[in-house]
Length: 438
Image (tube, rainbow, N blue to C red; front, side, top):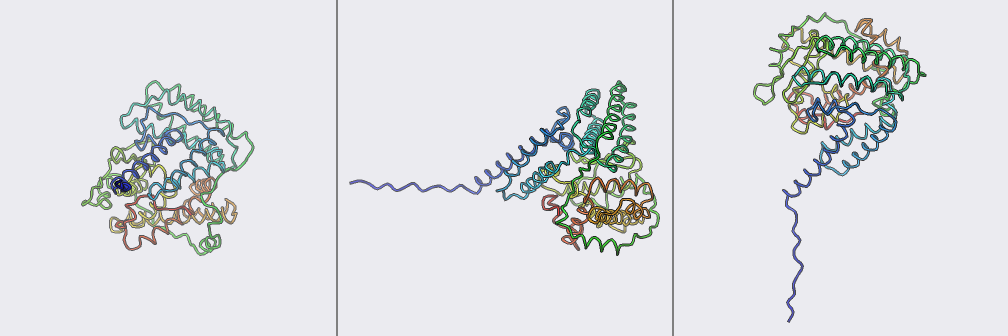
């Protein structure tokens, strides 16, 4: 008699096996993003300790290179579509945004490669200050060749050209400081400074053609609401903000925002005279703020940024894959929650900084959505900023349309969600991955 042998019961994968498969897939997706970023945004990867500094190469800047990059971003976006992981979905949103901005021609702005050049140089310079040996002669000579290879940039408009010329002058002054502190690089630095002049001159000779890509589409913005806001807004008068000492900001202020009962580390501070009013933040391998001698406000923002970063418990590549308006929106919220009682000077600075961001968002909407003449926006901002700074900010607003409107819109959303909780809001621990640009 035959004995019946039933089908063997199919074993279901355990939860641990399923988790292992999901983790492995996420890591595969991450490595694909890291590979593309290392090729197209090498300075950012080096700064975040996701690539060695000696691997730096100037990225190819051509129609063919960006067409290929766009296809790669779209392929990466496709990889993220079926994931339930919030981080992976955040990476996918960035990939789609990057692909769209390439398709819209953002890379052809005369300012786009210029900002890549400038950020790469500051990245390598600050790493050199930290003790990493940078081959300055090779970096400078290759940078000059790279600038000369930029033949597909459009001419921009009068605002882009003015901003490019001003930033180029600042960069050349900084190159002079590098030459004064690094032995044997005077000749290659001079060659690079000449290449900068050549690039600016070539842009001036091309036909004017604005190529600035808005961060938001007008279909997603209530133009009438922004119009009414501006009409009702009154730029307040301000009590002068007393100068806060660097010593107080680096030795006493951190205790007001870094809780003593957590694992968050107070950063190291490195004075870099050439940074003047600006600061740079690095959170690996140790939290560090590089700052200039007149960077009081920037130091405050840097420390708030580091506090936020250290709350995040996920992958730091998510910060590389985050559009810049999201960072500024979070900073607006963190400034809002600064403890008022810390000092009178800090309270006055907080009020003035928030009003500056409010006014810039209104001026941004005025020019972008209503077509206001830049001169009118400059006159409107002058009572808050003074003549020179108002002019500089109008140039920035015209060459980066909708940026500050997006920052303000998202900041209001975060403030509403975190109302009453301040720095204790659980959303801060999730870093940038939950935020959507309008």
